Length: 433
Ligand code: ACO
Image (cartoon, rainbow, N blue to C red; front, side, top):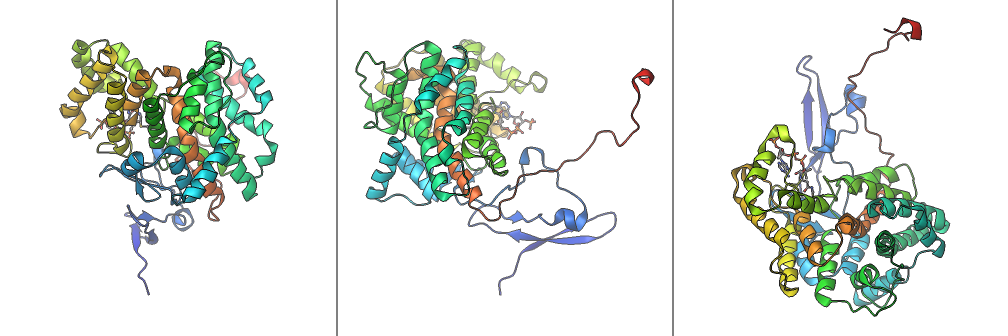
């Protein structure tokens, strides 16, 4: 007989005690099963920002924030970034195992065959202003997919779930590149399915129908790595948003649109764009000390964008790979004298030694370097977060599917600590001061 671990909660006023089961994962911290807490005690837990709350059981991604470790289905991200590619990581996240050569070929061709969007969807874009942010456009268009693909909306049908997953992964680059082309008034580029996922995206972004487009292998590899490094990240804000939206039984396109909306915020995926805005605001190296003083001043609310992470209290392992990729890309493109990039590198060095950042364990995160790589390869800034969304779609849909297929899943319905007025009598208009 195995001993079930428990913890005991004591009410210090009455001395009453309650026992709760402790659940053990395969690795990482144990969790206290508080599902019976309200029933037993009449109390809720209070955890704004969910800093101590496990919202689900998952087998997809594991993070050890103190050690700076990230595993997808047990495989270390650094090893995946070196030896694998985005299609393989996508298969791994979705299916739990690395594909055999035949499985990989069939998965890749299945994805690449779904890259075109419904022709009528291309006209949907005309309704947006040309100066709309591409994240706004992507959020709208992905949500609108539910209006175009009625045959993959039944979440209870495993085949429809699978088709929705292929459609989302395959069409996201097309939708994203179309948002960009629309903003600059160029014709949409149809996908070219014999290219790699990353190569096809680059062509749809930077190619024009009037000319042949040759994919630069260094940029293609960097793009593939960026996609891999952003593919999934456990129960972050956007993934939790996808799960919460999906917990009501909403269709996958609506759920992924919700994820895109959450990702857009500057504390999350919007940080890579914010890093460059911040560097521009700083202007030159001599202004770094003054900027850092503002960052350290609590009353100022300025943050060093691209630094810090809710979970990592060590170097973000994705940032380590991204940093290396960043240097490779800059070297291979022969970029030596970009003032903004120089400023970023100087900022990184200063902050890594600064007592404020060291003591608070604030390290550069993945967004610090991705913004710099994107700038180096000529990616427009407004597309930075969109690219993150393209990559994260794989993680979102894997997590969504895991939730839908989990018999323990329930509609997400947090409770609250109410601090408003208690019941009071209605005051008629004539009696209000
Ligand atoms: N610059 C300056 N100070 C910071 C920063 C930062 N970037 N990040 C955290 N701190 C400070 C806080 O002021 C706080 O100080 P205190 O203890 O004196 O009050 C302490 O470090 C802890 O910070 P929290 O805000 O409690 O940490 P939290 O986990 O809530 O925030 C977050 C994480 C949102 C990522 C934060 O570090 C941040 O705003 N970073 C900048 C934005 C960014 O780069 N986001 C990308 C995240 S990665 C991603 O989405 C892929």
